Length: 387
Image (spheres, helix red, strand yellow):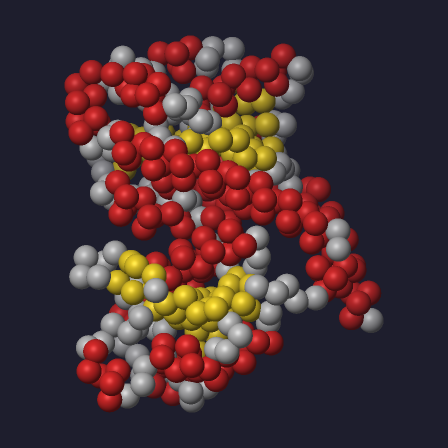
């Protein structure tokens, strides 16, 4: 009976997947590589083949070559709202769904919607459109991928304020990397094809430094290659009964604590590792009597809820367990769920405290025989290093 129910759920999943729209993502390593331009070119090609394609939201950034491609394409009227004494144009999700095209183009996926919008982020708008059975072609830059935030900020020195969860990219049916030689991108920038002349000098001195672009280009190439591997692996597992119903060795597990100031970094590390290994992963929190909701302060509760939300956005299965001692509980869960890699954060307390009382991390390492334990530590500037 359980097996029959599971097979029925598999079939229902296929039916639901068939009802949803397909998602195509153009990803690039910097502004100006041609993501929006290629989206519009594809829209014209689809239109010539008789496909009902419309523009949901496109940002040309004042680039004449891109703006010229808007000609001849239908655009769904934007939603104009007042925000901070300014009138801003936003994607109108309801209007797109009411128009019901076969394909819609949606740009700037990492965008944060203004207060009062149905969804907080534009990628969530895309999910609504897909759920209505409409196919979406969209674009964003690799530095906005949530799990890469720490890596990009450390590499470039630029703060990334808006991100897209890895789970969004993982749901894409097709991912296209728009690669461009760094030299060609810099020529485009200096020629005024990316930003206006008065912004070029500032861009060259900051984000568009050669070393930054080389690093981001490498990240973009690697991310797309890994996304293709993940998709192939997932397709193989869907076609394998044992893969559907049995445990998968080598899963990743991030160990969380309510008071951890660096939980976001641990979760991003877990997401990256799971992606490289093409496997599922868990974010596990053990609630001890000392960490019961009535015992921890409001700040710790807020951090914990943020960690839960981020874990789910990054594609993890969040698990909350209760026990007096977290270590055996964590190890038991790992062994019973096919986990091969544990990710823990190094104790933030003073070194002498660990000498007097063995830390949770030290006890996990000693108890995790047969498991790989990855210990992430932080320096005074909030950067990470792994031992």
